[in-house]
Image (cartoon, rainbow, N blue to C red; front, top):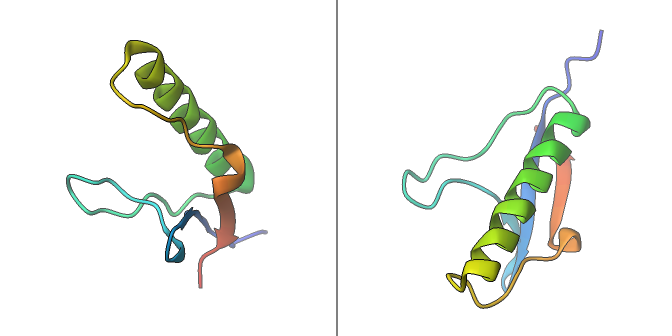
Length: 72
């Protein structure tokens, strides 16, 4: 049985850091699988694409700015 949990990190200007909710400060995850974490990244990218299309955000995030890593 796999008990490894995963989290999402983003490559910020200062380096890789955990991704969380900007308003609450809560870190996303832990996720039970890399598939579950990847689905969260896919949803995030889709939301950002919609925000760019509406003109709410000037630039979209790229998928390679995110990575999935095991939690300690």
